[in-house]
Image 1 (tube, rainbow, N blue to C red):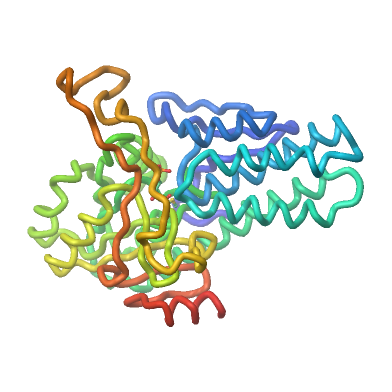
Image 2 (spheres, rainbow, N blue to C red):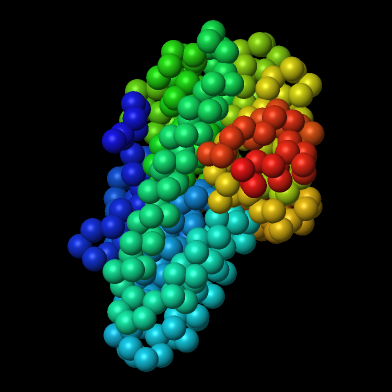
Length: 348
Ligand code: MRU
């Protein structure tokens, strides 16, 4: 059953194909792309048709389903060897979101136990990954909203950690949807999030679709907004959380966290445990994706930067655990994260 303010689903399976809402052209166009093989799924992840850590993982799981159908048709005896190439291609699509590697590992374990036609079993496993993510978001929504005081007024978010970035409802936007439904906040501020504009294109679209008032600002305006006392919490998602609670998320998150601490604004990270990487002890071990210079030098396909200038374009940054007030997962809330608290939460 859907919650309030919960109308968007970006990853859909019907007619034996995977359909992705094309997030490159939202909100101007609302178009689904049909995918039937793993190479096209990997391209869709790399090229940002689908993005956001949990959504990348779910999509890759469906990529394995599509690959298994083709490989089993090619060779009922040898499909498990053949599909290893597809899984490798999927794993190389984007490096930072650990949900991708988690989901592929889940699917590999299911593959190991299959005897016979894999399609129905792998489709059920991918459906379960999506459903579990959705349920985790509903749980995080309730847990995160419980941290927000009754008269908080407005919160600020960065990038898009919403329904579009997950199986539905969202991580940071799930908390925001829940807090808004409970009447604790009456407004959302969203950073536009250069260079891909996930804030102005995607977060704003989600909020408008689900009737939550939203105001956009350029990242550079966030500190002034905090100084004016307009923000009670900054709420963001994550692509990978290290064992000590360091948080990788969309570039610009770190400077928000520094500014939040300076202005006495609380900083919340909402992410499912599929985003937690206990194999990495510190955030400086998280691989940070470098994307093309053109994404910064151009806007809407048109060059805006001076000819001759070059650009630096890391897609993510790492916020140290000491700047994080709360990590909200479906297994519970970790306040002021440390290795010990993270271990306890993950073991729970
Ligand atoms: O480059 P993107 O759009 O995939 O980056 C997405 C983010 O940084 C999100 O905040 C993160 O993946 C969490 S999504 C619930």
